Amino acid sequence: MGPGWVGLGWVDARRGAGDTTNPMTSTPSADAGTTPAGVRAAVRDVPAYPFTPLDVPIKLDQNENPYDFPADLKAEALARMAARPWNRYPDLHADTLRERIAAFEDWEAAGVVVTPGSNVLIKLLTELGGIGQTVLTVNPTFSVYTLEAQLLGAELVQVPLNADFSLPVEALKAELAAREPGVLYITQPHAPTGHVDAEQDIRALIDAARGWIVVLDEAYYQYSAQDHRDLIRANPHCLSLRTFSKAWGLAGLRLGYALAHPELAGQLQKLVPAFNVSVLAQTALEVALENPAYVQQRVAEGLRERARVLEALAAHPTLEALPSQSNFFLLRSPDAGATYTHLLSRGIVVRRQDRLHLLEGCLRVAIGTPAENDALLAALAELA
Image (cartoon, rainbow, N blue to C red):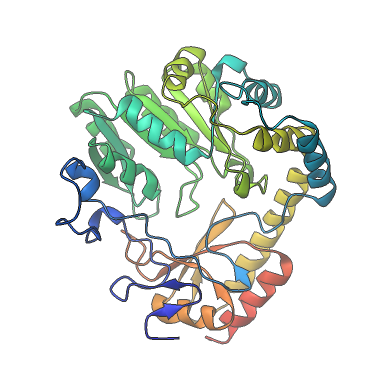
């Protein structure tokens, strides 16, 4: 294995393995001399999404649920898939699944929009309200917000988080007042910090953003004991993004959805390609929605494990585990690169965040199974 290779993928030595530096600040990898002139400059100038998969036993780098879909439910889903015709198109707009999600969420079906992953919804929301307008968010933030804004030529405005990772409410309100309406992204719990903000601060931003599209990204809400559906109901310019990839443990199926007022959902639905959810994924999700108890059990275990891991690391002499209300946490190290490499040598992959604003020395670590967390703690104890 030659220099620069780790596991299955090539690591750019300038950036570091597992680095999540904002792709907008990286050097484009495309050769301008061979790119067709018809490709928009905004696309040419943005490098590909910076992720390298690594072949290691313990995977704590993508905030996944560490457990697969329960075997009995998977068998039921496969049986139903086999019984359905595969030669026919699925529902035009995942209509059956929208109804099932609406029933589960106590929401109007006309206000549900389903796509293959919430990242697709982020792209469509940028098309809906960002092109030729503003995408407003914080720094650091989920990189897909900034990536899509750059690719689609929106004006991207990022306001730095406060030092305690809380929302910079007054600074965001000033930007809302100074700019033409566009899309405002508020992530709760926040990624990559795991911070949760006071509801009064979120309400203040929603009130200040009349005329804007306000997106509450709630991908990890099950781990925070927060649920902002009432805010969405009370504010027709807002919507909630949710996913089956995290607490539901179905990242491989790629399903996300939005909850919104029917009018806003209808405008967003115009941008969703027809037949975008396969009958196979729809069938599996129907089985999951009929059996949500497994999600509650796994979230409960995740919360216990999060508390255990953070408590164990509180006494570490050189590492600091930061508080989190999600299924991951930030680990601050005197040398993030060395800590990352040490964990990798023990078969554990995490995600570097140390080049992001406010996150010097930080790694992002997902909560795994009890055995995986034991291995993590043992490996980190070697750094004492």
